[in-house]
Image 1 (cartoon, rainbow, N blue to C red):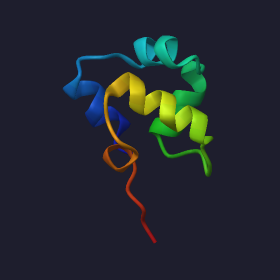
Image 2 (tube, rainbow, N blue to C red):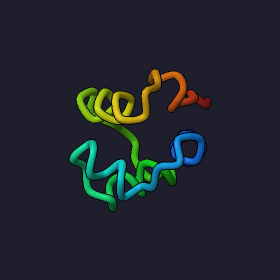
Image 3 (spheres, helix red, strand yellow):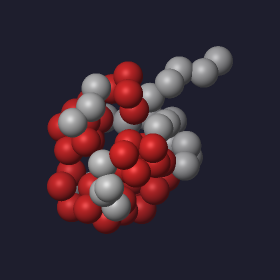
Image 4 (spheres, rainbow, N blue to C red):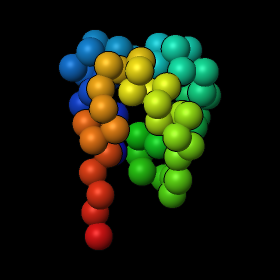
Length: 63
């Protein structure tokens, strides 16, 4: 999860993103820190829209 880097590049706080996306700060924090195992496509799309990025910019698959 590259949420920290994307937020920094866009000078946006987690609180601002939460407001724009309509997701709680707690859930975004869990996502940012890798403490979730799944994400809804609607949430992923909303985050990408707010950050003007693609899912591949946000996520990296590890094995």
